[in-house]
Length: 198
Image 1 (cartoon, helix red, strand yellow):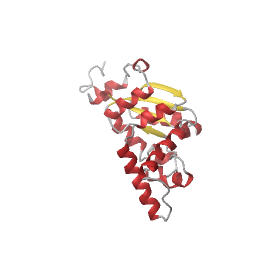
Image 2 (spheres, helix red, strand yellow):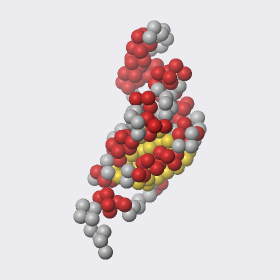
Image 3 (cartoon, helix red, strand yellow):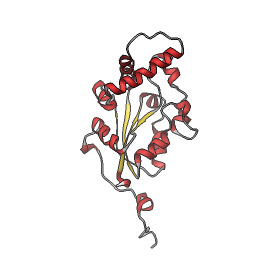
Image 4 (cartoon, one colour):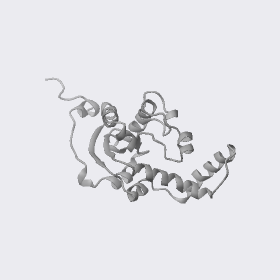
């Protein structure tokens, strides 16, 4: 059912440290999506590795891109493509475990699509004005690469409803997710608006 889709949102350590939790949650809630679970935690290495869930094909693809970029900019190639790819995940592990994060379960009509639209491109400098990343961050992959760190782009959001269901199991147990109805759901989902008039 489209109106019951869920998305995982992780407010990364940069969002927490910059006091952007309320701003991000407010933007999500104003769309009509509802939060059905929320917690602050320190991520473990195992959680972050399980969350990113990448395989050797992904490591090779990303590593080959890094080698291509290093070659184009005249930088030496110091390791194999797969090791460059694995380095991306290691940078993300270091970043995501560096401080508190806030994990959210967001539910509503086409939740992954709506949250992704609100969030903007993974590179804040490429994100449109009006998106969370476009308005609240100035980081770029180029800057992160120079510093040898993960990009600081405020949050993670699920790419699809299927990905969300896999990711949610990394961060939440089923009993941590609350089932409830918002009054505004009648406006959003009731086809005939039955019961609006007295």
